[in-house]
Image (cartoon, rainbow, N blue to C red; front, side, top):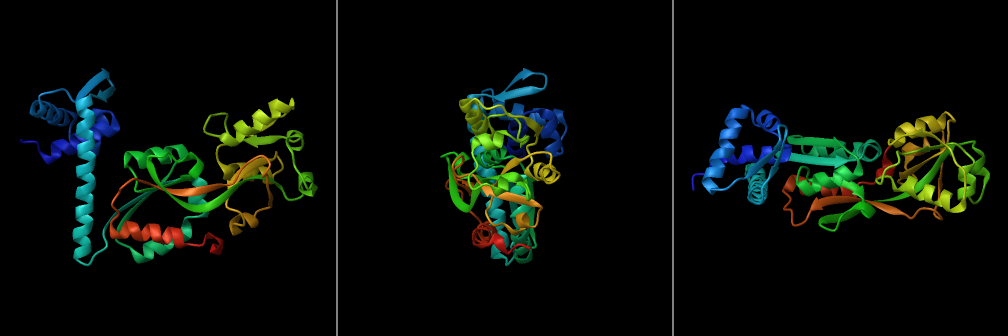
Length: 303
């Protein structure tokens, strides 16, 4: 077999990026050179690996999917080899890739990352701000080492480690009339303008609220749509409407805002932020250290 390393790398990027243009850019080669590499692989295996379905789109054949599995495994092991060799030489070098939603990165990560960068200054960090559903996809694809999402949304094919308990809470200005009530029901919420996430299947909070409103025959008004809790909170503070946030109870950063947070246990169940990894993934020393630091960090100390 005469398959070459660069051919495999080129094919991997082509499969992941879905276009010759993107893969050529990622591998610093021309599209023509990349195309020749793929043709050489197809001649090697005597079968088609890639099918063009439009000028800008392609898909892998069954054989191409199998080769991609092999390429992913080989590239992961090569990366681990480099990290192991660096560690044997007394250096903690390598890469660490983490994906999490904006609010998690904004409120829970700064202290963790400060501590980690102090201990491992030579590690190349990549941090991705992504919605929870995309975080799951990135972990499954092997594009990141760790992802943070809700345990209720974590698929069974990933390794899941509980991190922080979260509650879905009502978010209002501090002097809002609802804060004077002992119990808050759907009838109470429907009386006020609402700031809600977009109406998609990914936002279970809105779906549950609207189902409840319809079940009780309640009229309600959505005054603003926002998928970003920080943006929603800004307009809640200004009195535009009331909103909802899935947060770590007692987080100091939230207590400094001109906002009140009320749990709605009758409407929403508690959840957990979970650390997601691929099953049976071997962690190098600096990646294991990140996980240990993350799980041992008390976010309530953040000021």
